[in-house]
Length: 71
Image (cartoon, rainbow, N blue to C red):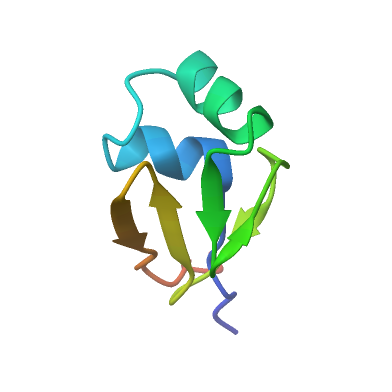
């Protein structure tokens, strides 16, 4: 069975280059500068799934993750 892939919000921001470090991602999220699917998100550990839309300071990103191999 293939599991639905997820990624934490702060990891995603760093991965797509929206922030240069995990610390910067943490600050942006805690300051309320990040929206997920149109709602302000202040939990940096929020799990994102395929299709989620993340916005930071006018930059919009759509989550696209590969399915995990269960082995």
